[in-house]
Amino acid sequence: MTDNINHPKHYTSHPSGVECVEIAEHFGFCLGNAIKYIWRAGLKNKNAEIEDLQKAHYYIDREIRRLRDAAIQAGVHLAARPPETLWPPFPGATPPIETNQHGNPP
Image (tube, rainbow, N blue to C red):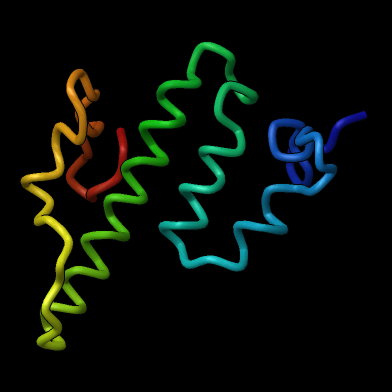
């Protein structure tokens, strides 16, 4: 019997035997969520693999913005490109997913 609350199959079925939370809890909120969505991509819902990866991208982008803003406030010069120049990173790239009024994926 699977435990859908504490140990859902889409987080425990990795070939390594490691559960997603054991890795994700060592990161901050945004990177932990990105790991979660990459980990479960296509496992929770086989028809939503791309959506899971887009959600991971959203959280990675959010973390980049947080780090960039903190560096700017601290007066640190950044060599990274500003976010408005990140898309498309390569020809044919899919744009980031839209967000709701709280800044979260819909």
